Length: 88
Image 1 (cartoon, rainbow, N blue to C red):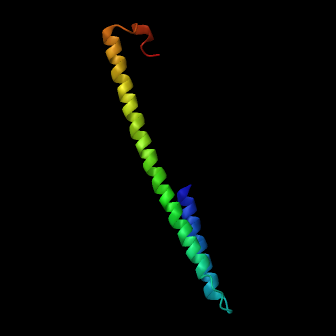
Image 2: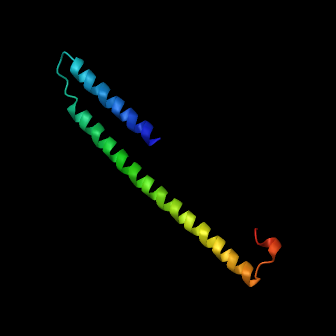
């Protein structure tokens, strides 16, 4: 999704620059291009934050799964779980 937004932002920026170059009457699109660049920068920043959060969640999920397996094995070894119910 973010890659699609990024490509769309590049495309829009290119189109604005071409329109600006093709205009016979001087039309100042610089403020719009700057706004677009700022918006793109914010999108990239949010994308990086989301990717980092997703990676931390993935690692946390992995750690929880490992701990669950470890505790289940300890409980089974101690006889707290009947063998037939251990996997449930």
